[in-house]
Image 1 (cartoon, helix red, strand yellow):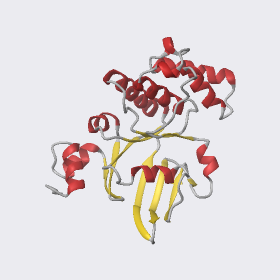
Image 2 (cartoon, helix red, strand yellow):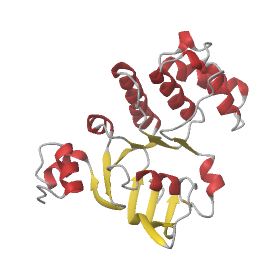
Image 3 (tube, one colour):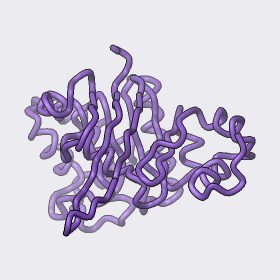
Image 4 (cartoon, one colour):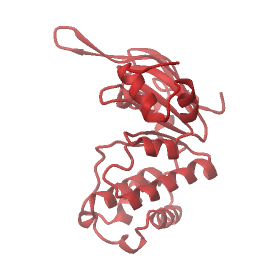
Length: 253
């Protein structure tokens, strides 16, 4: 269990929409994510990816089933979990009138990180994302891709054990996306941090992810290493696996 960072057991979330109409957003999901791996959550829009993440960080309560993060039950020990977990949602906001550095330092300060340590971490992250020269510029002058890099760095300033990233390279140019990917690889391989990311970029998945889970209509329909899934479904690449599982066309296992 020590090497299992996320574990869910028949995790289910049902939303009620007027006149008791039920929407099954997540349907009896059993999942394990191991310490130090980059795990990709794939699925079409509405498949349940965001619901799963929100359940794991305590923003939603399960309808049934159980979920454990860092060995703690998300319905009982969420304060412990939140101190050690970072979440970067796709729609994350940024403080436009603060500088890049101030965004990092302000966020880290909310977690009580000492000033000297906070400045050291900010220096390192700004260097990694290539914004040292712009660190004292207000973020409102940045491009969308530069803002996204600041947001990724902001999520990492607390040095979380587990990071949830929803479309981390959205709006980032090719070079910037590579910088973000390399940063995530380093966090995983050298610092043993666990990363769960959602993305529609299957090239990004192939480059980054140790394993992937594919969600469709709230159900976890496949889990494994990209090459293992390609072999299992006799597919030329992960895109073929994904398309087959989501549409049911050409599926052979």
